[in-house]
Length: 233
Figure 1 (cartoon, rainbow, N blue to C red):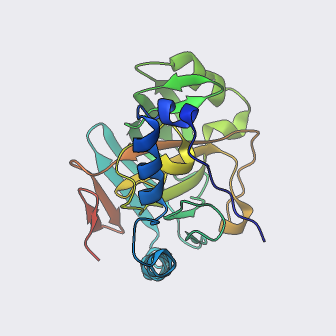
Figure 2: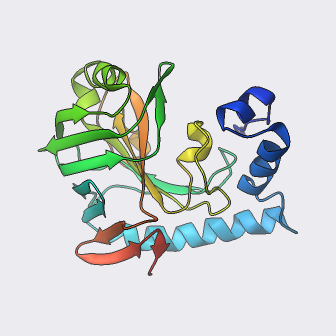
Figure 3: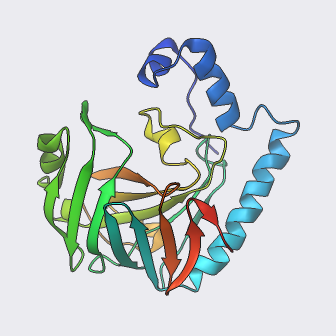
């Protein structure tokens, strides 16, 4: 058995724009260690995400809408994973591998992401038949193109994830925390996780996050299931 976590350090605090005390409190909230019974809290996450997966498993077409984003993916027949704290801590997400040729539309990633030491902000990707056909960024555009040009698989999606951890409210620059923010979705370009049914192969697996908490919607087969970061199911 194994679990991956992060110990709050001065460097991590500085990266998150916090002092050490603030970051320590942030980590406690992210891991539910500020709650009377953290084990019970994570059990509740496990059960809630299991119910969400029951609905997601019946879906085929996923639509993500937000300012600068209107993207359609297909996930029918794929397996959704329940990331509930048994491997990564903190956790709080469900994820799958979308059909490799299904992505259509545009997505704008509103949470900054680091790639090989360079920060990328305001990344925008346009997909046609599952492949990135245009890419730009407000900052770090060269790093974005470098990632996409790694190999052919880097221009396709290997993961769709939905963050559910309401104990994480702000990005820190650390993907272990940021991809779990409740009310966000993340898409990884590149390598799929085989356990989800994804088959995309690449040397890259880079998670990029968009926030749905202000003007965002998530729909399954035409039914809106999340609006402004709040689940309606």
